[in-house]
Structures are given as C-alpha cells and as structure tokens.
Length: 187
Image 1 (cartoon, rainbow, N blue to C red):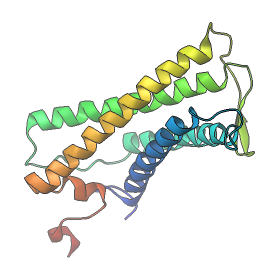
Image 2: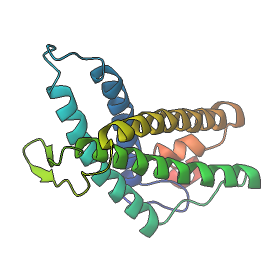
Image 3: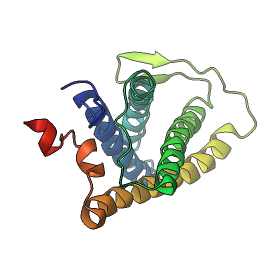
Image 4: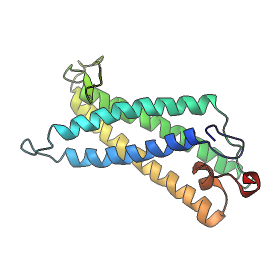
C-alpha cells in the first residue's frame, strides 16, 4: 500500500518519515564530529562535503515529504487521543518542519558564504544566491548549531511521545507510522 488510508500511513509516507529521521540523526552526528577535525585530518575536507551534499538531498526529500503530506490523505486521529494531545501533536509536527527547513537554510548560508556553489556529489551544484552578509559563515554557523540541537531535541521528545503511546497507552500511534494496519482492517 503506497498511499495513506484513513487508518494508517502508506509506504511513501512511512519511508520518507524514517529516511528523514535517520538522515537528520546521521547529519547531526557527522556535524558534531567534523567541526572537531583539524586541517591535517584525512576527513577535514571530505566530511563537510558529505555533510553539505546530504543536506541538499535532505532538503529535496523533506520538500517531497511535505508535498506528499499536503496533497495526500492523512489517517484520522485516534479516538483515544485527547484534544490537547492532538493540538500538541499538530504544533510539534509544524515545529519539526520549521526547524528542518531553518537548519537547512542556515547550513546553506554557511556553505555559500564564500560565494561558491554547493556541490552535491558531482551530480549538480546549488548556486550561492546569498553570500555577502556580514560575518555570514560565523553567524549562520552559530544559528545552525542551535537549530540542529533544537531539532534533535524536539525529535527525541516526538519519539518519546510515540513510545508512550505504544507502551503506556497501548494505542496504534506508533504502529501507524510503521505502516501497520489494524488487525480488523488486515483481514
């Protein structure tokens, strides 16, 4: 089942959700590691190139995911969720998207501060449209770090909420994002 139903998320939404989650965590770890590299480390140039290239591909993926979310059917909220839980979930999902795009934009501003385009694994380049702001790389770097920590922290809260629904409430919240239909619908 590729598309979402009223009961669960389809393969496209599930795959994009988990791909974005894994890539964000990977980029976060890579970013923390690479800023500690010195000029003489073998990965000094390679790690940032990977980080930038994957970041651009993540931007494309998140844009596709948001588009899929906007045009596709979304499963109905579970009856067991309170109005407060629904509101908090809605705000959290919105903030996750805002933080994703803000982190990627600040990363772009770091990468293009010198006026050079961002190369994406030799496949294509993204031009430097903004490159003459005062202290662009330094300011964008600080913002990028704060936003990345905020994003990963909010994603951790999001994951803990899903686990709470699964382990304590024993509802289908997590199972739906794993693409699992309810037992009554699977027959």
